[in-house]
Image (cartoon, rainbow, N blue to C red; front, side, top):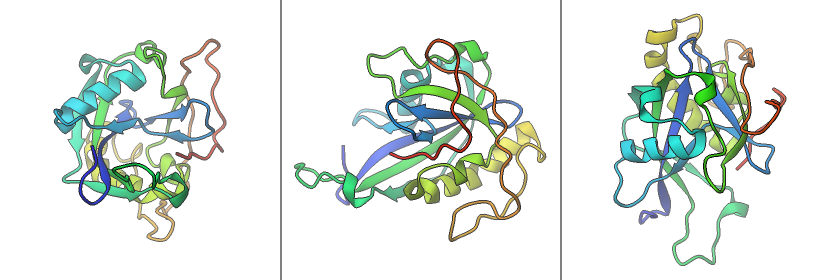
Length: 205
């Protein structure tokens, strides 16, 4: 489903541990890390699409999370030129997204990345709230900055200002000005051994 402007409706998910850290996952066969996200079907509401994508990409059920907040309206980003398939009948130039902040109420063992035939991710970890702004692929940083900036007050109500500090977003880099996020790591993977990636990994689509 692509709108007349060439944007595909999509949902994004910020899954937050009660201590303020957020779920950060590595895409299969890529070196890129990102939040869970996925396209909406024509018969779905954003909320319905979010729960479906949550289950497909993380293995979680609605009972494992609580919805804390949602962004108003659509947040858009454009794909890089190399990723646009000009030969398609309907050309998709980017995504328009509704972002949800979810509080994780389950256990780490509930997170399963291998429940579908084609998993989206192969590793995951918990990182500080603002960490993704400096580690997601460049063309997604603007939408990540807007989403996290809007969702931060909801996150702060649960985790407190120490876990989700007040920061100013650099308009040029879409990163926090006050300090670089610490990027504490704690997590696992969908495969055997529970190995995690390095904090310096940069995401890409």
